[in-house]
Every structure is written in C-alpha cells, then in structure tokens.
Amino acid sequence: MFKTLSPGAIGIRAKLTDALALARAHNFQGLEFSIVEATEWAERQGVDSLRRMFAEAGVRPLNFGLPLDLRKDEAAWRTGLGSLPRWAQIAQALGTTRTATWVVPFSEELDFATNFRLHVNRLRPVAQVLADYGIRLGLEFVGTASFRAGHRYGFLHTIDGVLALCAAIGTDNVGLLLDSYHWYTSKGNLDDLATLSNADVVVVHVNDALTGIPVDKLPDTTRALPCETGVIDLVEFMQALVKMGYDGPVIVEPFSQRLREMPADGAARATAESLRQLWATAKL
Image (cartoon, rainbow, N blue to C red; front, side, top):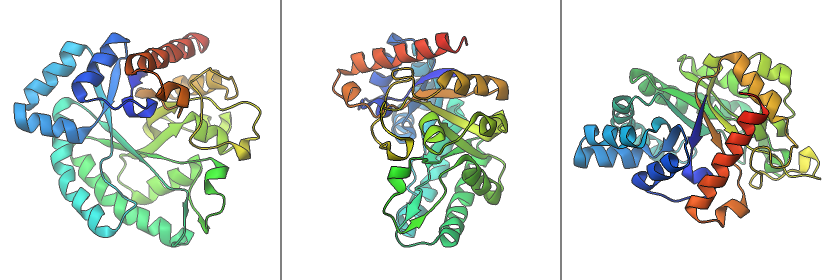
C-alpha cells in the first residue's frame, strides 16, 4: 500500500509540478494526477520529461481520475471515449496502471434495470480500451443514505452491487474504488471486506465520519480526516486491506472545510500526518 496524495481530494488546485513538490515535501509515496494535464505536458515536452519529473520528486504516478463523463449524454461520452486511447497511452508510458470513477446511486429518469444496462454499455468499451494499455478501472459506490434520499430511482450503493456491475462488464480489469466512508455508510462490515481480494480493489480512499450523527443521516460531502473522530473503525479496515494483499494507492478524501481553508502546504501536511497516524495505529 502506498500513501498517495490527491490534491483535489483535499481542496488543493495545483498544477502537476506543484502537486509533485507537495507530495515530495510531505513524503507521499504516490500521486493521483490529471492524465489530461500529463498528456498535454508529454505532447509539448516529451514523455521522458514527464518521467523525469516524477523520478526526481521520488513520487510514483500511481493513478488518475477517469477523465470521461459517463453521466452526461451519449455525445459527451463518445467524445471522451475517442480521447481515451491517447490518455491511456501516456499512462502506460508512465507505468500508471489504475484509474477510477464513481457510480451515481440514483436516477431521476432511469429505473434500476435500464440504468444498469446503460452503465454496462458505457463502461465496457471504456474498460476494453484501458485493458489494451494494462490499466485497471475502479468503480466507487456511494453508500450515504442521505445522498440517495428524495430521488426517484435508487441504484447501486454497496460493495456487492458494484461487484455485480463489474462482473456484467466482464473485462477482468474492473473492480472497486473502496472508500471507508461509503463502506461505513452503506452499513458494510468486516465480513464484506473479508470476501475481497487484491484483484477486486483498484483504489482505496480513507476518511472518518462526523460524531453524533446517525449513520443514515450522515452527509456525503462533509467528513473528517482518518482517525480524527474514531467513528469508523479504520484499524480493522486497514487490516482487512493487508489480509487481502492490497498493493495500491491509499488516498485521503475528507471533504473537510477546515482543510480547504488551509494553505496548500498546510493541507498537505495535515493529510500526510493523518496517514502517518493511521499507519501507526493500524501497526502497518
């Protein structure tokens, strides 16, 4: 497992050079980066220049957010799909083997069966392109009940639900983006994690939940740093990752206003410290 900085996940807007500097300064082992920005850099200055940047920072280019919107109309999806080989080629040249996106757990227009078919039909060609370049795709389920409330049709919001989608896609390079908050808010348990293997999990997010709020009332976009409140049993969560042999990035995604209000260096430092505390507490 690699302590990985995702600037956007902690409210930092940073160019690749600045993101690498922050990751290096605070001893992150990996970086989640924009493949669109990296591709533009490589096309201007060459992929070797891009590789040197990461190597000189001592930071691994571990994963990128999928820059393709599955949730808009078909024209937007097809445009993104057409650009995907170009992005995937640069990722492969960097040695990056993971990307991820999230699954909206509701729809106003599509019933469950129709929505499931749409996700399979849109994700399968994406996964096929990524497979050609040795890249795995993680799908994040959103377990927060309050986020689903009030919408016409419910959709996938648990480990089992997203794994069923992965199986239906059928390309063998699709798995979970496993987020500790969504595991907790979906009322997942350790038995659920015990059924998973390293092949099932592509990317991991860690965070904590606010205190004094029933799980079904927890908001989706306000959380806490790992080990900040102790509401989520992150020691058991991390130990489950060890048992399954997980070997990918571990990213902090706290949706914390306190963190967003800090200068970039302070936010990166606080995030790094939360991961150090998590590693120490879980005896990793």
